[in-house]
Length: 359
Ligand code: PMV
Image (cartoon, rainbow, N blue to C red; front, top):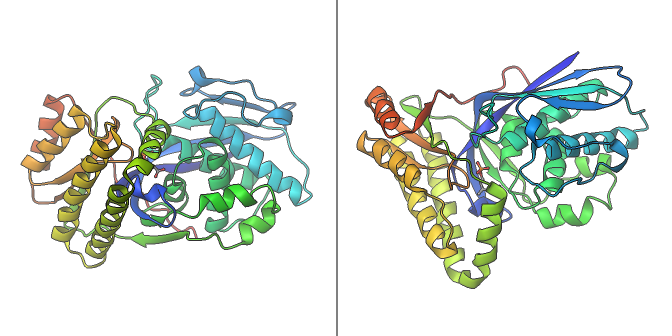
């Protein structure tokens, strides 16, 4: 038996801007996991998952590329992860094995609802990590990221892949998105082992630490959102508002830079100011693109956090899912969470997750 777990994630800042090549976001890996278990030496390949059962698709390795067009279906990511890893295995001249792969996700509520904690990225990374053990592949973290990024990109096709980086590296990171047009052009032209060795244009991943006086809180609105569809909508509109969109990018990058400085300098005021600023920028993007990023329930979550002295914003694509708060440890955190509960918002008991002892 092989078992691997990878963490979910939450965006702290830089959402949407990070979808453009070379733009940064700040992302935290959180202590809820997707676990993949592989039972070796089976007669045939199979995949099961309690949480994903209602998404089940038929899977045959021979024709596993894109069986149904559903970018929110977790099975697509599992299959893409298997495909890309086994392409790599074959490129190394190793034989393909038969196994049973099962997935257990703490990032999904069990009633088919997602928390918006990056389950598609976490399941992609966990599957690849488990297969790396099965096939005894020795990949560095950056190579693991690249393999998982290719698999995830093959399915979703429009995200920044910051969630994949978070799941691979853990902790708190700034992530600058690499040039995905470059990947789209070269993924079928360069052999996988070579592609993993190359330097990918504009990719940058840097670890950060949260100052000890700050607490990181998360509230869940209970309504799921589709990130890929929200990105599509923003992409459609951005050409129409070129200069305003450029300004959004510029200001978002400035915010991420300031928050990064705040983390490096233990300056909680600077961090909180720029979390608030990033919220405003996302509100302006929302108006520009005509998409709902901050739903009424997210606004409630943010206003309550604000009332208790926290700096809060939507996390990720918005449209539902979670909101995040950074708040000084001496504030009334219990009071804030109780107020959330009265407003129908579920406080999630999450902490930033760091991989220990892994290089
Ligand atoms: O909704 P989430 O948590 O998957 O985050 C999406 C963040 C975006 O910047 C909107 C998209 C992306 O891929 O970075």
